[in-house]
Image (cartoon, rainbow, N blue to C red; front, side, top):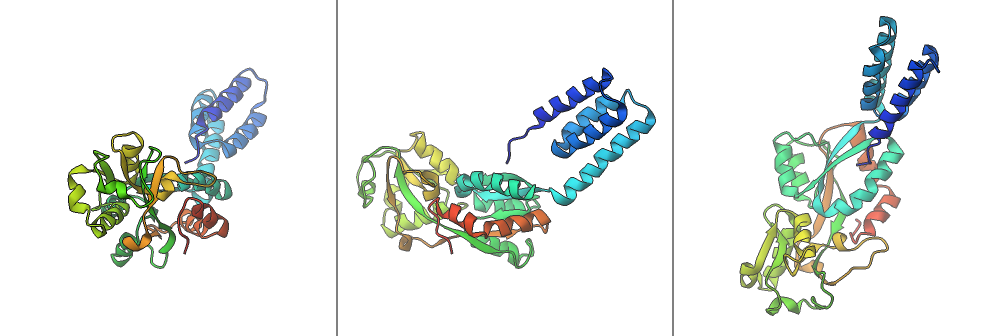
Length: 306
């Protein structure tokens, strides 16, 4: 998730190549500098430079350069893996903060996909190449473990989610959610309860309040909690049930108006993580999530911490 600096790397290699062509550096010195640059820049940029430089070198230098790149590729594979993580949409904001910190600490690079827990589960069942799954519930990681589709013993709860009825309009949602009983709104957004745990929680609350059938004609469903938030934030729905983490955060005051849904009115949103494929990067990331400092960051987004 870190910003790619491949453009800077290519500029460095082009500059070095130009100096070598001007004979500002001897071949041996140039090779040493090239090896240093490849250690701090992307492998793609390394190949970019090698392609241009080796065309004008003897066979000996071609093999040496190619061997150097090959060695770096092996080093990267062993110590700085790319980690593919399926992340429940509600956890997008914290992940944007945690991923760069993890990358800085370990050298691993996170490639994150955000979406609904149910859809990720189906994708993993069908062979999607995720290594870690951060779900919005406990059910789907449990199913993966029971079906031998994940690494046994790696499942744990990393957060407990909370839902909030929210509107960007100040004073629109009252402290008891009585707005749901009136006619002040045309549309209310929730995530699809069939695939999104936060949508399931919203449905449970509305059902407990005997409002699910009453409001069915006004409900607009998002495919996940992220799209649901977009419906409300853009005004396509006047209000909606979103994750508390989407409207709050460390040092952030909730804008608009809101009602935090009592947690006794829906089944706990126990969010579990599990390692889908056994890799060093995956193991490191799960241990990273268990650190007290990281748990503190997660708590700052309104989550409960077990």
